[in-house]
Amino acid sequence: MSQTLTLGPETLHALPSGALWWPARRVLAVSDLHLGKSARLARRGGALLPPYETRATLERLEADIAATRPAGVICLGDSFDDTAAAGALEEDAMLWLARLMAGRDWTWIEGNHDPGPIALAGTHRASLTLGALTFRHIADPAQRHEVSGHYHPKARLAGQARPCFLADAARIILPAYGAYTGGLWSHDPALTGLMQPGALAVLTGPKARAIPMPR
Image (cartoon, rainbow, N blue to C red; front, top):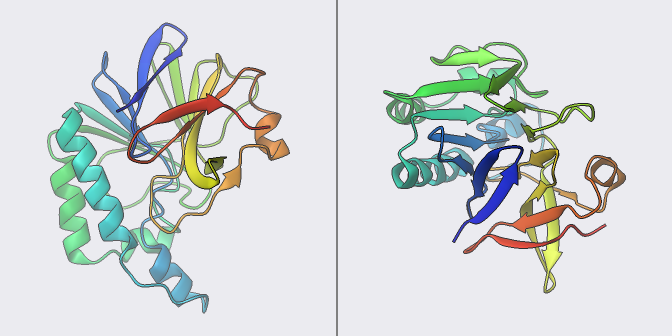
């Protein structure tokens, strides 16, 4: 049900959930979980949303970890909706995260919503290079063989909008993994300026489906 992608010398799999699986390294990458978004909105006087997004996101992550059994997990930034949210998760969510992290090499990449280290176990980095691939939050146009997030790309197929991966020979941009996250259309200039002609959009859902990137 996944879509196979090639980035440099590596073969990766875009999963229907929005996670990226690198079997050669047994690494699972996810981006933009935005845990604690409903609490952050309530704290700042914004829209009141049902506070279920953390549970929904952790359930999805737990399922992907159970399916792939990764040795390492890379969270590509904006894992929390702000730095206060990282310290305000309910105890059961913190224990859930701790169970998922146990025995794994877990890396938190800094994002624009959660800059700097947070008070959680794991390794905290601005970016991470493993072999030929570099993982960071926001794409660097000068970088090749890069995996990033940040933009929450989405595209439409048969009249239905879905979060999507964007992939070309230079980079893969992951969709937002968390519940309650919006999206940026793939035809937005911010994305068309980053992605090469011939790029693919891999839509998430029951099955990962690849289409030419809508421009």
